[in-house]
Amino acid sequence: MGTIRLVLGDQLSETLSALDDGDPGSDVIVMAEVQDEATYVKHHKKKIAFLFAAMRHHAKALEETGWTVQYFKITDDDGPASIEEACKRVIESSGFDRLIITKPGEFRLLSQMQSWSETLNVSVELREDTRFIASLDDFADWAKGRKQLRMEYFYRDMRKSTGILVNSDAEPEGGEWNYDQANRKSLPKSKLTPERFLPEPDATTRAAIDDVEACFSDHFGDSDPFFFATTKNGAEDCFDHFINDILPGFGDYQDAMAKDEPWMWHSLISMYLNCGLLDPLDVCRRAERSYENGKAPINAVEGFIRQVLGWREYVRGLYWLKMPDYKETNALDADRPLPEFYWTGETDMMCMAQAIGQTKKYAYAHHIQRLMVTGNFALLAGISPEEINDWYLSVYADAYEWVELPNTHGMAIYADGGVMASKPYAASGSYINKMSDYCSGCSYDVKQKMGEGACPFNLLYWDFIARNEGKLRNNPRMGLIYGNLDKRDPDDIAQIREEAASFLNELN
Ligand code: FAD
Ligand code: DLZ
Ligand code: SF4
Image 1: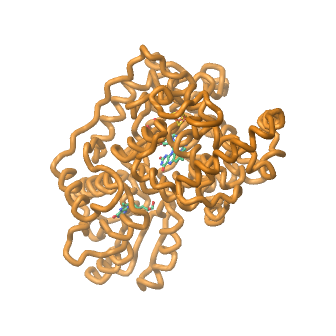
Image 2: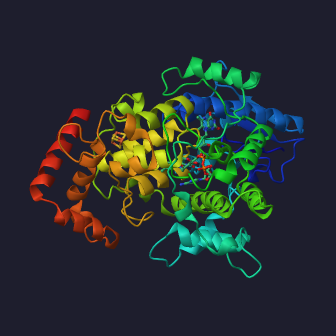
Image 3: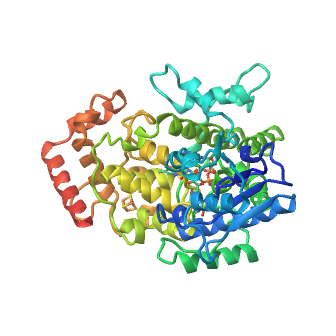
């Protein structure tokens, strides 16, 4: 008797543990576009269209290699509402009694699947997802006995274990493990950003976009312009373009932001890596080759590899090590509802309008926009972790909880109380002014610390520091900041806090 093998929307890799040892002649693969996955948070329209198009292409590629794929489209009459229901239907139609699954990327779905052998009355085998560079056991071994789980030390171990950017004396290429200090230039006015190669949708992708417009018209975001590749070859072309034309400049301006410049020198590959169209070890090796061939400098190549080999693997390990309790933490007792402008982009704050406007149009914003603009605002304003986590999970084409949650809950809003970051990434308007040209076109004045027209980030920053004094003053990395607070005139701080309160009240 054959076996049923499930392939989820973010499991579109050429090799997947659920398909190992499969027999294309007798087994059936299930793939399903379903309401439950598209709406457990109301995902951006472009994200759903991207996944549905990539799933349709992948199903066709699997069929071309001889597999039988039972594919459910979102527009099918009486289609299944959930992945479980799709599996149930294939179990009933095939009569097979064995279901093999690669573990999903979200705790929510894994806990549902753990009861499927009972609810579906078949044998269910959940296999590890082997599409990462470190296994979850590797991460747990690394974390064991450590007081602090800092990414930098994990990353160095990953460099050593893979040999990436490590020379024959086991020393880091270029002499340093980390070139972060050389990744922080702001963009000079005279510097032009590179032209981007952005693919056009083919007929399959266009049909998926139309289906999503028809079924999820009330979801956030614009379907057009659609510029994601939806096949493995297409994603490879995009990555080739990055390696050849963009990577050499990646290092210098990694933390920079500029008006109407959504891409800068970023790679735009997270959506492909996270659904399986690109392989993380392969992209690191190809970046390393650019350094070896003298085509890209060390600060660019190390900076890129640190993101994929370091941060991406680290957040995944942390998520599975700490869930489910991780999500429930709220170290700073933040409880403010998410302001409406996160959905509309309509705000006088130029930096927020830019980051949210791009998110709405592209289902993409680069890291510093996510961390230091929308994330920083949420941290300073004390937005409820649940609401801001759900926002990040729904609005980006690359968002799955294993990667979104540690970045938002841990890195951006410090709700985990320091598991991930040694101190909150709180910043006033001067950081945004230093790293971008946003402030020059803003109705607020970034130089003004209080009073009419003062930049809200300036008000909220000191309000945040004063409000959380009981929780943060003893953090050794916050000593300088609390020293500065102590030097400020208490009347000024009281006025700033009053102005911050009235700004926040108006948001609601
Ligand atoms: P580049 O800047 O070119 O970086 C190269 C690659 O490195 C990325 O494609 C990505 O795979 C990896 N990477 C970089 N930074 C991180 C990081 N901090 N964590 C994990 N991987 C990283 N990334 C997601 O993939 N999905 C998310 O849902 C997500 N949510 C985020 C939420 C917040 C609040 C923050 C601060 C960051 C989030 N990130 C997320 C990380 C990062 O912002 C994106 O990976 C990056 O912006 C994707 O764009 P890019 O491919 O152009 O990346
Ligand atoms: C994100 C997503 C969406 C929008 N739709 C589907 C879908 O219809 N079918 C599917 O198999 N997967 C989808 N996904 C991806 C899943 O939500 C993802 O596999 C889990 O969240 C685990 O990472
Ligand atoms: Fe943002 Fe303040 Fe600058 Fe305006 S002045 S863009 S609100 S940092």
